[in-house]
Image (cartoon, rainbow, N blue to C red; front, side, top):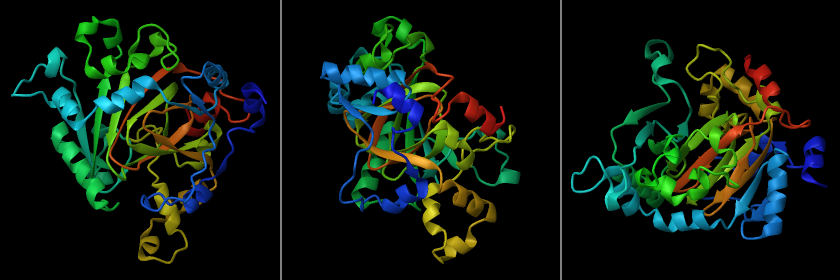
Length: 359
């Protein structure tokens, strides 16, 4: 069936309860994946014109899919060595204003988590006296220091209950309109994301809010959240597992709906704890009743999971939720192309999400 019909009937993508997905491959068992990982998302070869016509149809139907064999993403993966990235983020020989090769220095920051679970919050609204320690802290790491720890995490198989680190960087939306000689390395290396003219990945440039890049180490898991903008996510290196849920799954995902809460419109649920339910462990006994209640609800949320590998791009439609685990040291960048309000008849859209979170 054509994609627009699939969007009406819910035939695609095929969904399963979150509990089933995590029973098949528990979140923190990175070294014990299923013997066969079945890809259920449609995937299209960037170098095949017919495939890309179909990809466009799926994009317009607001359905998730993957694009494989993207030349600029593959090229960036080869180029983005730790040495190259350190040069661009940290500079060299004490230079503070510019990176190597005359390219302006890029900005980034590291976050530390007490374990592998990272959730979004607005730091200035987090009251430690009431809420306890925040989920993560900004730390004064250089990129080189972050990368060293990420390599260590891969080498030792860092356990989920140990401290984990995450590096974030963003390109401002105004950079694409400036002289290309002033562009930072991300804009230069990802022209399909930074081009002032429409491309398949950045298809509404005026609505672009910059390019966001995330460098994860083994095990780092980002709590489920949604983006209003239509989102193209490129895996430059490494691999990440994405668990996607449609807009109308929102009521089952534990979203924070109190408007003054620092995590408003996001979830604080660690879905990895679903495996603790009814297992009789001390961790289960110590689980707060509110968390237990929400995990019992969340395990029935409809989802689909996929592993996004280097050289691939994942399309996440407006208001679709995504829960992400970095399977190894990885680099990923995304660009958004404005909001699609209606979504689809079967999976919902902005209306269902706004109703869920009370906006």
